[in-house]
Image (cartoon, rainbow, N blue to C red; front, top):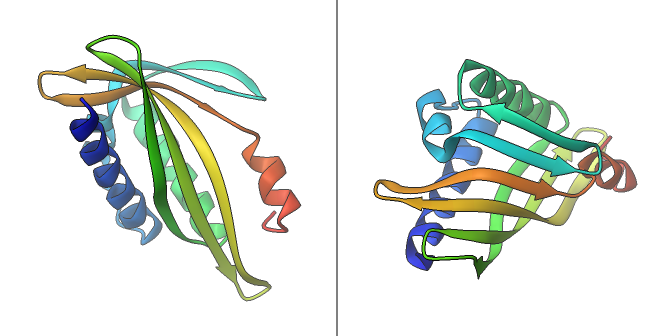
Length: 143
């Protein structure tokens, strides 16, 4: 399972980089997530469906990342916590780089914990847990 999860996040990283460049692939978004998923952060817990609303939320999110000067988003580390033969938590350490005319290059490291399910056609995200992104961006002067 570990190799397939590593390949998954290499693909995820490439998708994110293309989205930051203004070239998202909505079909690829749908392929990364399970039919339904949960998201948890300090703002609360939400459930969602892998449908047109997910694709639209991703488009808006990536447009916001571009607007605040996100230039790069890279996986800097990956650790797995197996649950059973089909499920694990992927602890993904990300490094984001921001640059705007009014902001010197700013690098922020953070971690997101993805709930993963291994399927016959590859892994899918069925949930994630993240910290307070807005607070971190404010603390670094990005917002």
